Image (cartoon, rainbow, N blue to C red; front, side):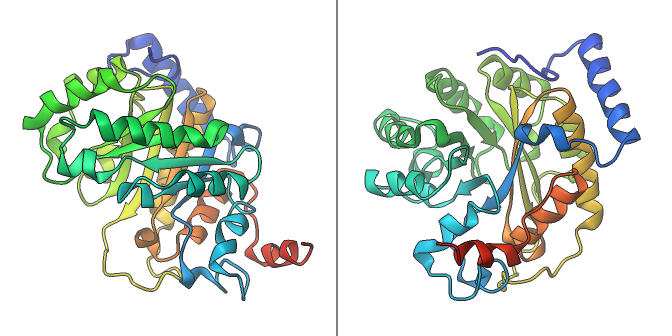
Length: 304
């Protein structure tokens, strides 16, 4: 699949000028993109957190109700559990049934492929995973290929061999956790196969570099992950780190991407600031979207 929108890794002056013009236009008008929300899907990494009850989920919400309530506030979620094991068909169909039309699931590729087999000799489990992912039908979003921090550029042949085998009916994004991966050759390789570079706000690659890379899409969508650097946070019920400045920076990039018609999937981790639903709502406000007030989720539940 060729890159059809935005700026390719090997983009020329015309494409770069197109992006820069949209960037200038975005900076002139805030909030910029109320009419473009379909291109910006923002959510959290996971939904199954007891600490969110009271802070996000209405008091008394049962674990079995979490996803249904979550989907009233956000239209996408990143599923972490697929990293640890391929879920049963019944589980995946349950996700589909408990969410409304238009909802999207991003799935992590199993760690058996990415971390244990290191992208090698994994056709069997990969095919099983893809078939399971397809159970989501139109609700299937991108699959995240999260590479480990010990997976370095010396293993480029494994990645290069994997990319041509990825099925064309599924979107894929790759997350690198070493700076050595970020070079024109790797970006061109991803673009050749229509695979997105995951833009991550975390401790592995400097934010400044990631902000710049967000302006060089390698696919017709970009996958964002806001991770944060503090893994010591254990209370997920409240914001504990002020990320206003960072969110402002990212909102400017996201607004520009929306204007050049690049689709965005973005997911916030609890460790980014302490309580990811609130971080997503803050980002939505900066983008001119209309966040769902958690108080209204309780009112909606009372209707059922």
